[in-house]
Each structure stands twice: as structure tokens, then as C-alpha cells.
Image (cartoon, rainbow, N blue to C red; front, side, top):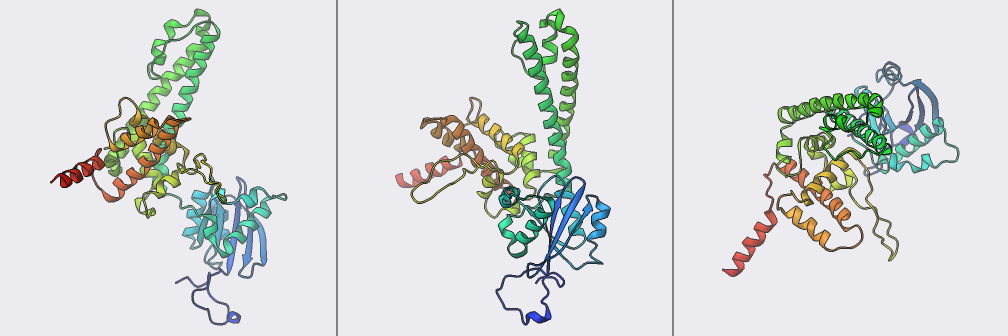
Length: 378
């Protein structure tokens, strides 16, 4: 039952027929920028009734969309840096908020007359009749978003440290010094004695920065482990899979936010962007690369876990055996394709463990095969 003020029928419309598409009385397109939010409002008949803009500030948006002054609206905005807090603010004001998937807005991006006003109007018209065409995005909770910044901040420090390490190696190589292989954590301890004296003034400050970054990364590692154990017990179940550590398991739980949001575990692979694209037409159905939709960090973490599972230290499991069979088929880039396939299957497995609460059995399929063979033998 829809709320009055959004879908309420007009007197001149007559009685509402059953099983008809419900069109909101007013639909608002919100094109969000760093300084201004451009607004376009269309009515039930598709007529443009308002164009305006407000500052991208909480107080200004709350005043503009105050539910006590305006009827309940359907607001369409595109997913982006500001969509998290703006969608929460508008929902608190009592409006229906739909966050559109940017991948579904090619019509806006490819327009020959693109502008902020036109984008806002296009969003309003797209969301007026059938919002499902926009593949709406459900933002994670405020706590999940806050805790996820811990992992993203650690990831930023790791990338910065890697860049500095590569800088030191590159500079040393240009002076004829090839630095020995060592772990990133011990790099700042082993390298100083190998550097020529002429490079000491320029590279020692960099090594000091690498040392500081390593300390901060260790602090983040402790914080991630603490959060996973104390606040997200589901991560312990996911870590039963060898190759899935605290960072991967906590990122998985925080980014998916709620196991119940997926009706089928297989949908998770698509959500993370590990599903192959498809461009089928007639008898033509080429093999394409994965979509790479969804969160890039989680996708990289799962691929890293898949590489461990297929690597020399991975434990014997159904997942490892399945992946090694793909590698054994050979062909171009067989190992890379197998890693991605195992990562996709791992994403599905982790969701199943999280949703059902079952314990992980590395050789579950093999156990069923052995039982079936025993029944046949008896």
C-alpha cells in the first residue's frame, strides 16, 4: 500500500485500476555536484514543473525537501561520493529515494547536449515510470560504511608504501645498484647498507617514510583483527576457508552488508563484477571478459585469495581441485581464467557459509562421491 501524497490518485483520474503501474505524483531528478545540486521535477503526466538548484549542504537540502512543507516525493540520484549521506538525509525526511546505477545511465553520459540541468531532468523522467530500469543501488548502513573506511585507509597506506619502495628500487637501479629481494615490511631495514653514499641524502628520508608507513599499517592490521573478532563474528566462519584472512573476510561482510539482500548466493559473483560479459546475437556468443562491476577492492582481495588456493600452499579442497582442472585444460591464459573462476566460486561459497551458518567442509563434494560409491558397492 503506497503512502498518500506520493501515489494518491487525483479526483479527475477516476477509480484506480488494479494491476496498473503506479506512477508517482511528483518525481525529482537530483544531479549532485560538489557545490550545487540541480533539481528537476516532473509530474505524473511527464510535464516539467520545476527546475532549480540548492547548495550541496545538509541544511540546504533538508530545508528544500522538508516533508512538512512538501508532499512525499520520489527522488532519483546517481550513485557517487555524495549519494550515501544525501540518500540517508532524504529518507529521514520521508521521501522515497532511488540511487541509480551509473552503468545504466549511458543515455545521459552519451548525450550531445549534456548539462547539469539536462541530467537532472533525464534522471527524473527515467525514474518516473519504471525505476527498475535504473538497477537501483542500496547503500550500506552508516556503521558499515564507517568501519569500511578503516580497510580503505589501510589499503591507501599499502599502495603509498609500495609506490615508495618501487621509487627507491628504480633510483638505485639507475645508479647500477640492484637491490636484493626482500619483504616490504623489512625493506627499510635491509636497504640502507646497500645504497651508495651519493644516494643517502635523497633516499634515506624515503626509507624513513616507508618505516613510518609500515608502523601505521601494523596498527590498522590490529584494528581490523579486533573489529572482525568483536563486532563481526560472521567473519570467523568465512575464515575457515584457507586463503581468506581477516581483511578479506571483514571487507566481504562490510561491503555486502547483509547476507539476506541476495536471494541466491550465485548473485554475489555478479554483484562483485566477476561474471563474464555477454554479447549474444543469433548464433554469435563470444567469450568475453568479466564485467568488473561492483567494488574493486573486494574483487582484488577475492582474486588474491583464489591465487593462494591454487598456489603451492593451498590446502586440498573441492575448490582447489576444480580450479586445477581448469588450469589443466590449457589454452591461452588458462591460469588467469582459472583464478578468476575460483574467485567467483569463492564469493558464492562465502555467502552460502554466511547465510546458512554451516561449517566449511573442504572436501564436501568428495565425501558425497565416496558415500555414493559405497552405496553402489553395497
